[in-house]
Amino acid sequence: MTTDQKTPAIEPLGSGEHPWAKKLRLWRKSAAAAELALTIAITFYLFGGSAEEWASAVQFRYSSPWARSLLFSLLLALVYGVPSFPLTFLRSYYIERRFGLSTQSLKAWSLDQLKGLLLGAVLGAVVVLGLTGILIWGGMSWWWMAAIAAAAFGIVLTRIAPQLIVPIFFKMKPLESPELVNRFTALAQKTGTPILGIYEIDMSRRTKAANAAVIGFGASRRALVGDTLLYEFSTDEVEFVLAHELGHHHHHDLWAGVALSSVTTSLGLAAAHFTIASATEPFGKFFIAGSNSKTFNPILIFLIAVMTTVVGMLLGPVGKWFSRYVEARADRFAARTTENARAGARAFRKLGFQNLAVFQPPAWEETLFYSHPAIARRIERLEPKA
Image 1 (tube, rainbow, N blue to C red):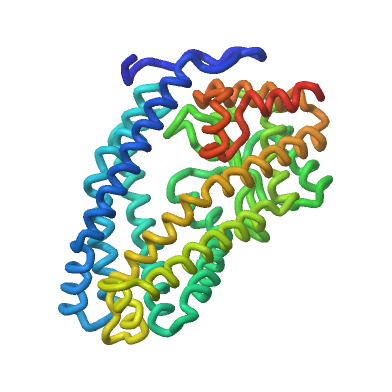
Image 2 (image 1 turned 180 degrees about the vertical axis):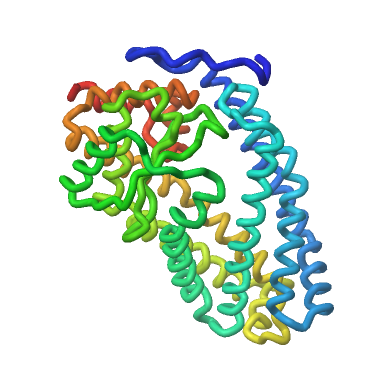
């Protein structure tokens, strides 16, 4: 298989798993495992004394706690990011090209990476500065104050994403299919879920995979349809996919997700608080010093990031279970509102084939890692109604 090979064309109803699906899964899992192993190795290296030395050096050189936090966070980003870049290239460019999913040139991929890096730097700086202020002024209450701030920040990002973040990576234009617009508008009105615009996005510039979404809330809520979905799917099938996305908003899954994320973040921050506060040398002293801007040690940022990440990983299966639950509920909503479960079954077959998804992964893998029910399971649930 070479990077120039084309994936087989999508077959009609009845097509099954793509012949390359399991190979792609193996490549992706191997790359993800390598990235995780590297991240763990770097973290242990930093805990070996390097992080403390760098934090102390930054603390000695800069009097401003804001400068200390930003510079130390930049050092951490470089220490994690530079060694990981080859694996990032392997996972997000080489593998996707090798299996015929990516349509990006190396130049276009590099530009996307640069955009993501700059956006991440801006958002990361906001998080670091906000956390620094909370650590300085929050005292022993810092962890729940940080949890509230994190939830608010997530809500703001969700609100502005359709207008400010998505256009950075995709070109958007109003959907030009009157029939599909009318159908979806009717569904939105029927279910009492107003949508302020339906847009086509140019996914084909990056990938052959198909997708759609309803994002934002309030005045920013918009339906987005990938052009790859429009090219290969019938109007009935696209309507079902959009109805599924509409179901998430009808059931308030966005807010349920925010609540679950807030609980996870709160537990991570609480774990960080009690671990650092009760730690023996060398970390316990940094918590005590954190309440004073003059003695603030930026290693607190690193310790909190590690603890919240570990707790997030441990609670990951809970989040995956909740995600699979709401996805299955959205499938049922789409089948009920469109009254066309057969179109849903066809759409999932095509999506699975086009996106090179494994139709029936092992149960343990689905439980631990899948945010959506297995394709075969989703089709099976729809077909009895077809």
